Picture 1: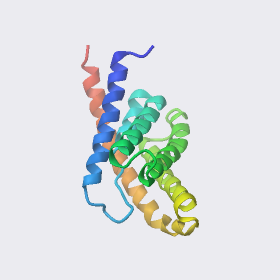
Picture 2: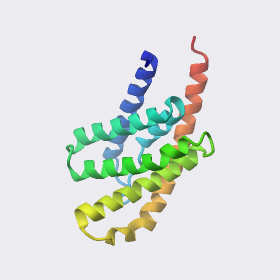
Picture 3: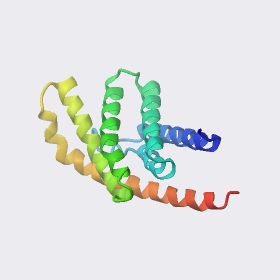
Picture 4: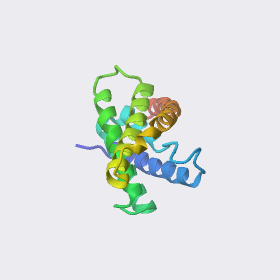
Length: 170
């Protein structure tokens, strides 16, 4: 059975991921086609605090809410967001299930890079019709690694704070 506290935590993480992703849309992009992926911080927190299932729920909830609010369910933005989210989960979930063999940094870096690969693949196949977009992989991949490091650092701080607070709860 699911506890009310667990459901509340999941709702908080999904809503925070949505808020971070929405705020990010209001910021200027560091470069064309590059985003910070701030919503992914909450996915990483969910993986640690709630487990694999929680991380999957946070990613799915964030992608669905962002798609509904910012572009429509079948817009190119939504399709690419789903592609990136699914691709990152395909890589991060098995890493999480390996019982601590990978750090939060390793999981975040792998997820960020997979996100870029998934988006480039779908954009190439669905919207462009050629593999020409893969010439952007060195630039986008480097940006993904930088944002993956940043997101892991932020998630690590939040997880430590959560542990400190939850240890004081009755």
